[in-house]
Structures are given as structure tokens and as C-alpha cells.
Length: 257
Image (cartoon, rainbow, N blue to C red):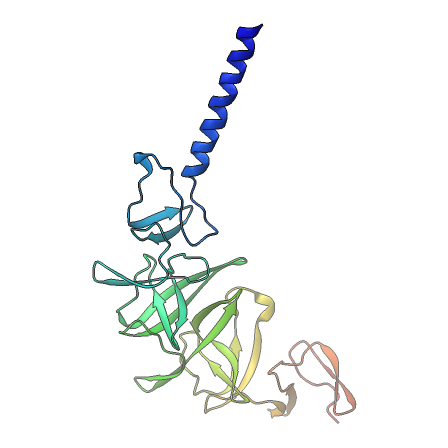
């Protein structure tokens, strides 16, 4: 009985010691440093460390590196919030919109670049234009006589830049951009086809200078209507300036007078 008790006690001591050793060797994700076991096999080595799907950089003191980091003549940026290496995204740093490649390196490419952003609802493919110094264009951009517009979207604190297509409001005017991103100079009808959701397919009537008509439009003896947000009225009865108007499924008002 005494021997059995001693064996159990010894086994318990081994388990406690083993757990303690394992605990010391664990990386502490939510602190600004990483603790290692005092044993030689867990000595701190400066360099890149991968935890899960994220990369971090550990200095010789075992601390997470944050901010800019130059490694093998490439620039990287480590988040000051969670210490992760940024990749495949745009980040506002000191007022500049910097783009980081999928390997985390700051892009030095100049010109157009196709990017794929990952969100909770899926992926979004678009184009951006890089300046050659790591930053990307935002707002209006003129190339080969065509105008483009780069907009921004903020999702959970993350900012992404994307080339605008379809209709967008800029400085209180509604502009229309073709599927290749160029501002349309067409005058008349244009059909917008959403590549993700067909329910957003609609029609616009363009002025020839890139802007969209709003309000009442008379075309070939038929009346149509777009509200100030660019919504095309169709297949419903709407109240406009205090009066109710009914539109068929082609957007034609059946009681304009």
C-alpha cells in the first residue's frame, strides 16, 4: 500500500513537472513578448515565427517587433495592435496608403495590380494602381485619356482600396464607370450588371460627361424616373412630389400626367 502511494505521488509529480515545462514553453500570443522554457532547446532566436496562419518577427530579446522592418532589402510592416505581419492589403501609415504583397513585402511595382481581398462573406477581386514607392492611388486618376476612380472600404478597422465600377456618388454627383473601371462618356441608356448579385442589375441614363441623370427623363415619348440616389423606379407605385406614379417592369411611367 505504501509503495502504491509512493508510485502515485511520483507519477503526479512527473505530470505536474511536465505540465509546468510545457507551460513555460508556450508562446504567449496576447502579450508583447514570448516566453520560452529555460532549457537550451527553447532558446530565443531572432527572426520570423509563424503561429497559425500569421507571421510575426521576434527580436533577440524575445519581443514582438512592430512597425516597419527591413529584411533582405524588402520592407515589411508589423501591426502595432496584434503584431501580425501585414499581407495582401492596404494600410494607412503616416498618411500614406501602402500596399503589401501576399508575402508581406511592401510592393515596389508601378502600375496596375490585380488584388483579391478576403472578407467574411467571401472574396472580392479588383484592381489598384501602385505608385512605385509602396503607396497606391486613391480618388481620381487619369491614364491614356480615360478617368478612373479609386474608392476605399473600411471593414472591421481594415481599409481596402478598390477600382470603382458602376455608379458612385462623388462630390454630390452620380458618376458611372464601365466594367474596366474607366468613366463612361456614353450618352443615353446603359445597363449595369452586378457580377455578384443579379438583384442589383439596373439601368441608368447618362449625360455624356460621366454623370447620370436623376429625376424625370423623357425618352421616345416615354417617361422614366431616377431618384437622387440613382435608383431606377420600375414595377411599383412610388410617391414623387406628393403624387403617386406607377411604373411598369421596364420602368415606363403609365400615369405621367
